[in-house]
Image (cartoon, rainbow, N blue to C red; front, side, top):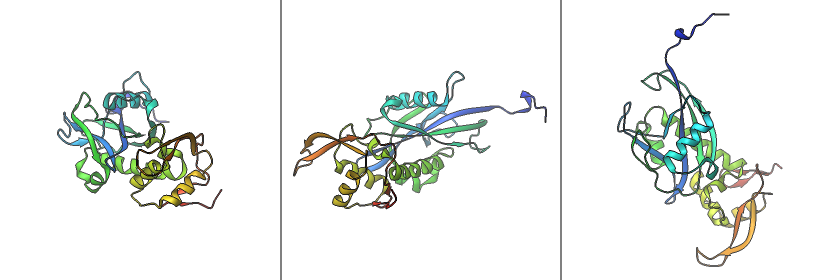
Length: 240
């Protein structure tokens, strides 16, 4: 076994980055900041920061989320996405980042953190079409985050994380349409999601906020997985 010493290794740091996705103004959007410091000063980036010596990765992600959005980790769906550690991803030193995916209902205007000049919501589709728009390797992180979110809608109740505490089937369908970038038949969608055990729990109340006939209000049910799953494109798997 090789006998390595600490001085044999170059400076090394760990960061967390957040891909915070929400649906705003009929589009899937992501929280981005304008960097106020080098490297990539003035460029847009996903929010994030260095992990403190006395905190876990999850604690660091929760802290960054709170600082950038004012929300606690308990108010959103927050999960580890992936780890990115290419040697040249950060010009300052060797930096490995652990990216997190956050899903939430329409969020308020964010506030910039300590090292950001400004913060705001940006359409995901526009950023994915322009890799140079984001600093570091954040285009790759965002692309992975969007694909994870789309896949989660197929097999888990993650779509409800984009909804308020109570919502209609139409609200839920809108989430699927925006995140998947598809158009779904309302009647078929209603039949499918109300037929998935544990996905929706009726509240016993209705709303007429969208006009027309009263629509039933639901909250998220107890299911952790969708059986059968919803397949992208609006179909339901025949597998049970």
